[in-house]
Amino acid sequence: MKLKKLVALALTLALTATVAIGCGSSSTNNSGGDKSANTTSKKLVLGFSQIGAESGWRTAETNSIKEIPNLDSNVELKFSDAQQKQENQIKALRSFIAQKVDVIALAPVVETGWDTVFKEAKDAKIPIILVDRGVKVSDDSLYSTFIGSDFIAEGKSAGKILTDKFGKDAKLNIVELQGTVGASAANDRQKGFADYIKDYPGYKVIKSQSGDFSRAKGKEVMEAFLKSEGKNIQAVYAHNDDMAMGAIQAIEEYGLKPGVDVAIVSIDGIKDAFQAVADGKSTGVVECNPLLGPQILQAAKDLAAGKTVDKWIKSNEGVFVGDQAKKELPNRKY
Ligand code: AHR
Image (tube, rainbow, N blue to C red; front, side):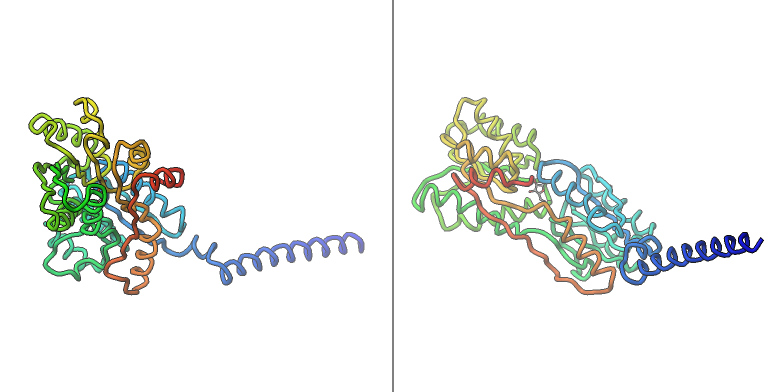
């Protein structure tokens, strides 16, 4: 009987100790690390409106942004694809506002037409992060920050690739494949290039048309340019790599050698473009960084915490011609 009581007492003590150890480790997690705190605290909800999937660059950007919840498990991403339509982006923004997300990120397809919906977000106290493309709004305080590249500088760098190759006194007929009409990436890349070649009187843009940042459209427009101008074209300036890839195909099908008979410069830095430079089919590529996920995450966390962030978080980018592209090719991440 005495033995039975002792065994029962020992069992009770052992059970109490196990429960106490369990509680102890859990409370250590609560106070020391944020792992178990994360399971109870409210997640930061980030709504992102993407333009679509027009280019390899855009796909790389989407993938980088979709990685955000894997970088920080305390962030929930609501992703919306606008299929190239501003009206879809405005609808997505209104839906994010209705869902009371903490922060909105937007890659705006075009520059204008955002004032009303941005004001609605501001009234709802939801900060807006502009991603990769800029906007023209009546009041810059309608958005918190712009994370992306200097498109005017990119246009100038593209011009410089040509003047470095052909020299100051060359005579060059250039055709331009513009990006999406009304997009800051198209407007600024056009401006940067035009400003740069002003100092080179022999360099002339003889045709300029939108290829909508897509490979298929770039090819189609280049075919039309070749049909009307033929061998009168000495260079192609494409606002992105995908259109340049389409132009290369069109030039080959026309019976000319891209990179030899017709120089090609483009912007983005996708693997295909690096390969084309390495193969001698393209003259050079200006890099534009699409891997913006980590910077968006940081800005979203700062804004949600009430901190101010830089108005423009600028990307660093390089210019690659000839052997530089060949050397860099194995390191390309997109
Ligand atoms: O806004 C950036 C541009 O959009 C990229 O250069 C182009 O490839 C994309 O679709």
